[in-house]
Each structure stands twice: as C-alpha cells, then as structure tokens.
Image (cartoon, rainbow, N blue to C red; front, side, top):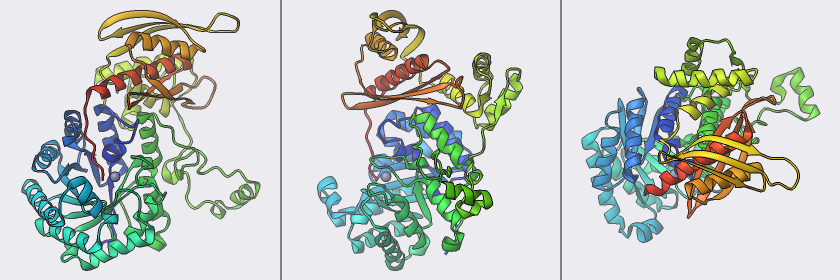
Length: 512
Ligand SMILES: [Zn+2]
C-alpha cells in the first residue's frame, strides 16, 4: 500500500457552508491559491448546483489555480453531475465528486429510496461522471451509520462503474476511532477490487473526534483525508487540516506516511482564512492558537531553557509561526510593495496595486511599523470587497462624559444615492450602528462584536468583526482601520452588504 496520504481540502465547500463563513468569489479564489501553495492535493471548490453564484465561484476557482485537482460536488442526479462538470472542466485537473446516502435512516426518510434503488443510482451517476472524466470520487453519505454489508455493495458498485476515489463520511460525527478504523479495514478487505480505488474519509467533529477518526482510518488504510483549515465547518466543524498533517509529521514512527503539505505554510493559511471569514482563531486551538506554543509554567520554562525538546514536540517555525518582521517602511517604494504583495500570494493589477500603495502610505504616516498582516488586511479591505450596495463615505462621531449621549453623523451611498443621517446611541459604536440601520433600512440583530489588534503596539490597526442576523440569515463583516470606531463602521456596513446579498440568493446545501 502507498505511503502517500492525499489531502483533500473542503474549506471552500463544507467549511464555507458553516454559518457566518460565507466568502465572496475573489476571497474564494485567493484561498484556493493559498491552498495550492500550501501543497494540498485536491480542493473541493463548491457545490455548483447550489446556486448560480456557487457555480460561477467554482468556475473562477478552476480557472484561477494551476495544477491542483479541483473537485465539484454533486448529488447523483443527472442535472447535478453535468452542472458540476461544467463548473470544473476548465481546471487542469478536474474531479467530479458525487454522493448519495446509504444509511437506512437517510434512505428511508430523506431519499425515500430502497437499497436497490440506491445501488442503481450509484451505478448510473458514476457512469455518467466517468463519461466526462476518469477522475471520479464517490461518497456514501452517512456511511458510518450504514449497514456494513450494504455499504460494501454500494462501494463495489461505484468502483465497478469507474470511481477512483471512495469516500466514507462520518456525516453526523457519530463514529468512534477504533470502530471507524475497523470499518475502513472491513471495506478494504471485503469490497471486490478495493485496490482499484483510493479510500478516503470525511469526518465531522460533533463529539470532538473528527481528527482521531480520520487518523484511525488512515492507520487502517485510508489514503485520502478530507479536511478544512482550522476545522471550520457546519455545527462543530470538520477535520482540521493542520492537526492531521502535524500528527503525520510529528509521528513518522507511528504512521510512516507522507503528504505533500508544506507545514511551514500552515499558520499563514489558517490566519488568512481567519481574516477572510472574520472569525478569530481561539487562543487554545492546537498548532495555530496563540497559546499553542506558550510555555507559562515555571517548570516547563526551566526545561525549555535547558533543552526545548523536554516539552516541545514540534517547533513554532515548523508550522510557520515566525516572529513578525517589519515589512514595509515609510520610504519603501511601489516596487517593494509589489514584491511583498506577491509574496503574500496576491496577483494584483497595476491599478489595484496603486490603491493598496496609497493605503499603505497613508497608514505609514500614522503607524510606525507596517507588518505582513497590515498589508494583507489592506488588500482584503481595499480590493477584495463585494460590489457594494452600501458604501461608507464619511463619519463624524462625538463622545464623552456628561448628559449628551454619543452621536454619529454618517454619509453613505445607498444603491448609488448619497444619504446622510445623524443618530444617538448608548455608546459611540452603538450610535454609528443606529445611523447605518437608518440609512440601509435593515435592522439586524448584532450577534457578535469583536475588536482585535492586527499587530502589537497602541498604534496597531484595529480589526473589527461583527456578526449580524436577520430572519435566520447570518452575515459576518469585517473592517480594519487605525481608528476602531471607523473600523467598526466599516465592519458593520460590510456585514450589511453581505446580508443584503445573502437574502437575495437562494442556496441549496449539500450535507456530507
Ligand atoms: Zn461534511
């Protein structure tokens, strides 16, 4: 059996489906390029039949990357399969990923199909996909709760029809590591021609076992892991890419397996995702959290000073956590910025670079040191915006103590028309949000409000993330500015734009 484990990243499909993690097309393409440079083997770019927007985003990703395999997800329905193919076919290495549920509970209550019908649909779907490409993956949704013998028949049918990757999902996060490993071993043993396909697993973290289940399956012979950056995904999330990769990398004695991921790009990749979706990385998160390498206790520190290996099983540098360097100074030219932007993974047109250059210069006037994170935040802020229905033009806020409540005067364009309003609030940020509500006519509930300093120092840019909710639709917005009230206004207006857009678009979700 091969000693290569293929890394299949589904941040852009399963991860993006999680509440508040919606990305626009430019952001998806940027993240896809990051995943390619990280060294993952396959990216699942989306579920093209979900909506026109999803279809176009998958097309843009397929066209925006180089050699990496690009998968499009589809149900076993003929229309879905053709739609997925049309979305990914321009990629250098396209893959069709089709799925159907195989557990009794899903077949009876969701599909309303018999076992025989599911077998027929599996065969027909894989055969149809194979007409487009030989790179076909088949998934048995809710495999971990399926009857093992029946599951083996479904898998054998898919392989016979031409599937080259067989994915066994633990869709509801129900499996236990030992049991899940045994299931993979059982299938490898009992499915005729199992050697003709690569076995894959896709786990959910409802019981906190996604990584453990994935590793148990790999130990048992699975050779593809479906993962997301930081483990983002619906409910409790998916299997975390960085945790699977660092387990393989840290324990070669136990696994003896390799994957193509460049571990030094793990942290920058997770940080980029966090910036894009506006969800900070929890401090205690393994590998990428701020505390993951902080040794506070005296005994640990003493041991660390004598020999790092006493308490450190991997180094911060090995996962890409290097000290931040000052990257751009006040006197750096456009050429230096271009190099930096490219190093960070962005391909900007000259006029876009000019916009970022002006923003960096303006920031350098107010802030002593400009770091990688600052440049990245400005690119995302200035270039990667949705075409905005609401645009913040000007803002004046007064606040203080005494009997006059804080006040915000705001000028915005709403669908191209300039509007102004002034509002009071409990605090200055509340006043700003009230004014924005008044101008947009939206009145969402503010579910979360968070300010982070992008870098250290009291002159750091403030990165604000807000999450809003209106009639069940949730949207996240972010803004970065050296003034936190302005950053808050930008984040809130950004969330309003996303909310308006999401309310327009009806989208189907794929559960896998
Ligand atoms: Zn899933």
